Length: 194
Image (cartoon, rainbow, N blue to C red; front, side, top):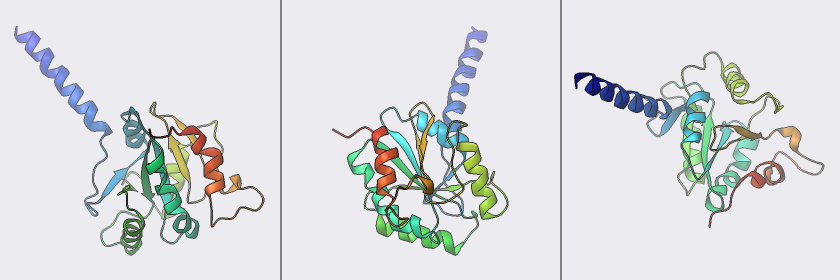
């Protein structure tokens, strides 16, 4: 009987620990933000049985990010997708770029999209952290260039299905409107809400 009780406790503890490993923790510096890394966002995407997960990399200093934010956020109204706006700034207290980004996203977003920031496993300068994240999350079968305002679509199996890139634009499209790229690469992979 004692052996069964110990096994039961171990089984419960293992399940609780496994569930916690997928949890996106809140930032200690910015309580409205989730701390994100490749492992926990892939794990979180697997826990979404109905919706795919779309990450949008964002910096307030990035003109395409600012111009195209709203068009990305409204996808949640029509499609089964959970969107995270991912800030790549260094997660330190009172970072003016983070504060400006949060303010802009909240003013733009009526849906209350989740905002995330790269966690402390990404060290170094802004470019180094972002490049490490992109390298980790990009599968070998997808080629992408270093750049911001990327849409990274993850299915419910935790597989990255698509990553948008500035090279996806066709003649006549500009960085001020990425809807053509999104319409070609992301929307065909999404399911409409009923």
